[in-house]
Image (cartoon, rainbow, N blue to C red; front, side, top):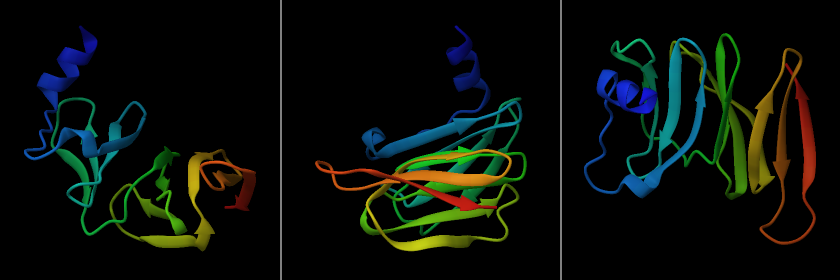
Length: 130
């Protein structure tokens, strides 16, 4: 039931292919996710308010993490990137580039972490201090 309430409060409908919605992260103020068919990184207010964030012309969002001020994501592609942006939508930053298929990003108070590697084979954990 709670999911239905959120859906009614903050609807997001993609007209051409819902399968392209990927990666989700949330806290008390917002829910953030990638719309890879449209090239968007979106944020919706959890209180039913307006769109909190809408960035366009994005690389695919494979995994997403957030802290109190910033969103972090990886694109999962060979030669891929780790990026961040302030929740306000300002300060888009590439934190690491030319990575080997980065995926599964996480963040704590001191660092950003992600896994990287091919679909089959060795996977490595990387850490980048904030």
